[in-house]
Length: 153
Image (cartoon, rainbow, N blue to C red; front, side, top):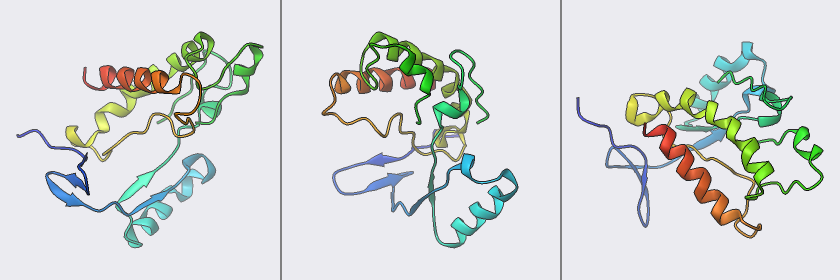
């Protein structure tokens, strides 16, 4: 079996399996929809022509207490603010150490990548951070490198 080519971006379009791919996306927050309605909502999205689904993994829902990560499949947890020097979404050691808990999530998602036969074509590690924030660029590169090291192993 040949290796699948996942989502790529060039100067003017996305491609999937080397073919042009037009993203018709929608969002669903699984934690806001009762589990009994998940299939119904996903089928309705497909009927509307959605070919790409986005969702959040709300950190505050899955790790309500520091060190107790309950991931079944980000909002920031309030316990981060117990550190009076906390600098959110920066390379501040207290924040980056807390983010380490998500190392448990990536291996659970990795087998579902498109290139491994699954439905996931892309992952966005952080969607609230702007590059104007102090240390954001170095934090973004650090987070990307960590995800890649876990996913590619």
